[in-house]
Image: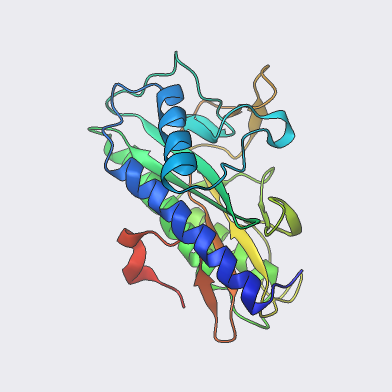
Length: 257
């Protein structure tokens, strides 16, 4: 379950490369693009520019390199020609990357054009909630501390936390132990140890927390049609706290290590 220093160094490289993929998307005008065009852009960049492997492609039979989840889509949105990003949308891109045998996983919710204040607030709160969870990571802490910090922040701001999906251990495989819930009680659950690597990826809904899966078997949406947002990082437990392996440049000031 824990990684050696050599393995952590390789995971940090995968995380750095994955962060650069989001840098590419930051420089891209998303309005007017289909989610399939974004998928193709990201695949080309990972394969040809970074000489890495998009780890989601073919995973569990998934045919694309990323999930694109727009507005009321909670997660696992399938890229499509017909899903064109429009002014006012929010969209989460969930992307994985493998380099040297190790996988990094991260996601970011983007604001497309002029987004209404209520949607902006949801996105900001979700980002902040992820960081509340990251801030709870240290040797000797419990998994429940992470979930409690996330859910407390969400509830204080009037949002609900999706419970059906969680963070996970990661390394040579995309999904390893432990499962990292985004709700919980402090002082409960697995004790964190130096060298553990896992994702923290809360999904917050503007309305109630309940979700359903569309007939395609992938796309998960809010039952009440309310907006949903998500952020995700891959983190490692260090001797002194936590290292965010997929840290993006604009988040440098929030570094938790």
